[in-house]
Every structure is written in C-alpha cells, then in structure tokens.
Length: 262
Image (cartoon, rainbow, N blue to C red; front, side, top):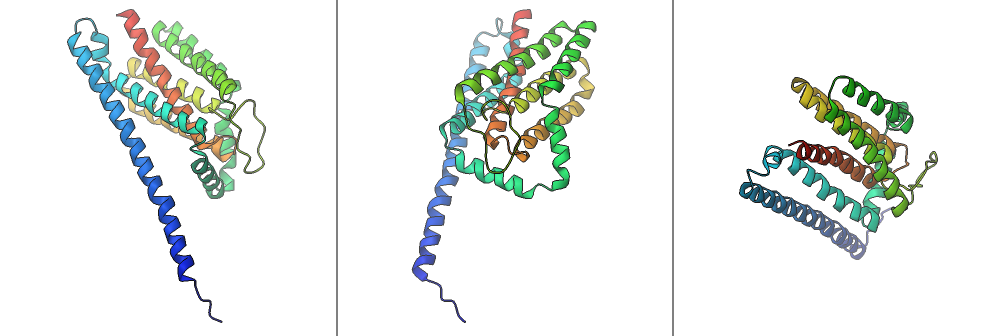
C-alpha cells in the first residue's frame, strides 16, 4: 500500500513551522539585544559619573565590577519576571518543564528531593543563623550583617511577591503541595542569596578559596533550581527569576555597606 502525501498540506506545515520558529528566534535576539544595550548604557553612564566624581565615589570605582554584575542581574530579573507574570513565557515554560520531566532518570529523583530540602526553611534558617553567629564570633561584623540581611531580605521578597503575583503552580503531573503561588521559587531565591553572600564573605576572608567557593555556590543553586522543576512545583521562569534576584541582593547589599563604612 502506498501512502500519498498531500503537497499542499506539507507546504502548509513547512510554512507554519517557518512562521512559528523564525519570529521566535528574532524575538529572542531582539530581547537579548535590548538587554545588552540597556546594560551597556547603564555601565558607561555609571563609569562616566564616577569619573567625574572620583574623589567622592571611590567605593563605586573600586566595586565597579560588582555593580556591573548587579545591574546585569537586576535587568535580566526584570525581563524574566515581566515575561513570566505577563504570561509570555507560558509555551516555553511548559515545553521546558515537560522536557525535563521526560529526560530525568528516576534514579536521580532522590538526589533532587534532597537538593530541595537544602532550600527549605528547616535547613536554611539554622544554616544562616550558625553562619552569622560564627562570623560575629570571628569579629567579621560586616560579613555577618551581609549574610543575615541577604537571607532575611530574600525571604521578605519571596513572601511579598508571592502574595502580589499569585501565579498558578504547574499541574502537568501529580506533585506535592506547596504554600503560595509559583512565582518566584522561594527555595531557589533564598539559596542563591545565602550562597552569593557566603561567596562574597569567603572572597574577603580567604581569597585563595574564592574559585572553589564559586563553583560550590553555582552547583548548589543549579541543583536546587533544577530540583524544583524536576519535582514539577515551579515553572522554569520561576526559578530563573529567583536565582537572578537572589544573587542580586547580596551584591547590592555589599556595595551599600561599603558606602556606609567608607
């Protein structure tokens, strides 16, 4: 038996694929271009202003890289949040989540469940408290304040934004119940805030351990963020925005603390 294809239908399918695929690619490139131009404009504007006020803003000049990273994180977080809250990321979120669910080996479920536990309040509150106390005992008051302010600030951001946004959690397969809306991922945001704050502290106290601490922080954030998607309780943009905001907070707080102590 021979099955004859319909040339008109095949042509229409190719046309539809082109109509769907090409604009999406151009939209992504356009968004990245806008973000890059905005970041570059802000960076050069800050640089020019600091150059004009160099005597007054030595802290800004010294922490220019940290400020640039903070600006990148903030602009990216705003863009991701805008797409998530506005519903524009819906198809990409769903496709990505289904792909992760379909390609994650069942043997790794326990690993991701453990990773999620490390982002829970039962784990983070004692860890942040002990870290803050140890820093105070060591006489590192500024670092202790950075860790405490980052974690508390992150928790406040999570609570407030969840109450305001009210995004519906994924329901693509059976999952555990969690408090609050889907946006943002509280586990990811608080872990990113604590990990970034700790990384900054380690870079100041033990500069030689900076690279190792950086990789550990990145691995922890990625595992927690991925675990929330593997378990099906957050959309990809929930965890992406949370990671960006969580990393931004300690950087911004550290610069502010330097201003106050300069």
